[in-house]
Length: 296
Image (spheres, rainbow, N blue to C red):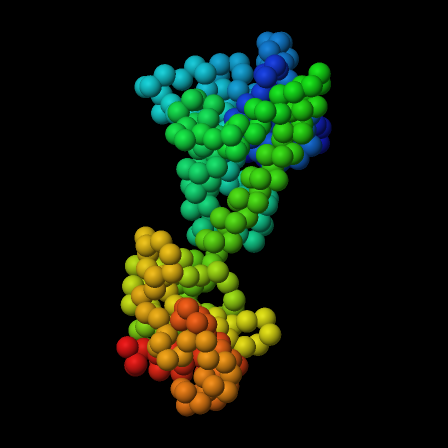
């Protein structure tokens, strides 16, 4: 369905107090439909002529009408509020517009993560089934913006707040999924050393992927051209527990001291906590990781 029209699209939602689900749903719809005007009303004549109807009207068609109040437990969409309904239909469009370079292979994963996380929490907040809702939850923050005489202006402000938080969360999810794919395609040496092509946050990814159960160290290039060798945390264990640490005798050694101890020129350091070390070159970093494994 083509959303961009020559005229402004009208997005209608209910007036009065707003909640997280109608704010998020309208924000998503406004983002994917480009030129639009949002009308907050319960006037049935206006609702009947709108291009998109959100959280009002007691009707759902999966394309332009997105109310959830008429659902019962027999409905396939039961458990979703307005945000979940809109995301279910237009989530892919929203993601592609925010990141046109996203690969189709991770598009569905990204949509699901947001549906189960951010969007799902907003829906649960509206339906009163969100466990552990706090004063800092997104739903609570949006509800708290129902202040002042101009509620419609506050609704607009709430949409802006929502979009900043939503987009930041979505971009982080996209980045993580891209990183997972890149990490999975990285070189593995001797079955226990993972060598990345670029710097990225990857320790948690490696610790959680069953494909990397045998990985003990990760070699990561740095912006300045040197390399870091990091340990892999044990999945599900809090703190700094690692599958394998660097040898104790390397603790807090710097440059020449570490090079002399290991017999590998070009060493930069080994942290006293034994979870990270540095070397000037890729080959030296790999050699340092191999040596650390051989000493265990």
